[in-house]
Image 1 (tube, rainbow, N blue to C red):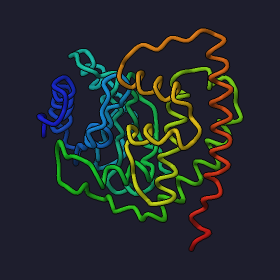
Image 2: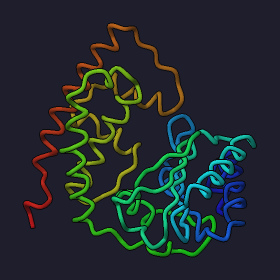
Image 3: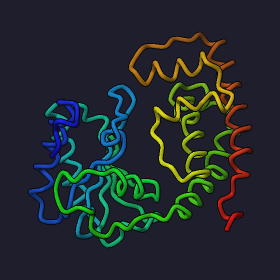
Image 4: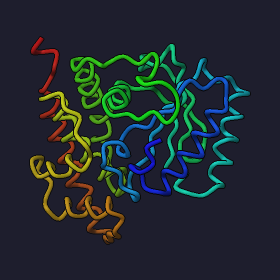
Length: 258
């Protein structure tokens, strides 16, 4: 494991995770992707993204074993609350619709091995245990990735932009606005850009300097305070930016050029 590339506390957590999973006969490989690998990791804001390839989908008994493993791991210290660990059957690693067992910070749930996850893992992943490239994982065509991003913008994010309450929350403001430049980069050039790069492009979406500074400060772990009136006006502004930008991005239909 390239521990020198990771913060010491994260390297320790991943080392303990690797050792416990590598001892299991059903585990094919353990892989890290995302901000930790691209150099964009923020202790205050980033997740620790891990994909575990297994020989078969965990049944209920195995899922309980894995939940106990993660609970015990959390008790050893380190940033365990940031750990998101997706257990994917190697034979179905390319199926973005298949629900997989997912440790999400402090509980076991289900999630998908989405095309964006596949692309990030294939383009900038690290093997903590097991072979590289990950068995069963194929390169994601740019056209397929663009179609998936366009569908998410016109579907999920379009619906969210119509809601009011989420935009009162810092996490939704930061996450939603950062999605916009990342989606634009994928739809126009096929590039996977980091969140830091996305933040540097927010002005092009009409995000004012004061709000960009707030997003950067929260990502750096610095406190940002706002009263109720300021939070309400920020929510209205963010919602308008989201709606206007989604309408613009929706017109970047990748299928229209094929």
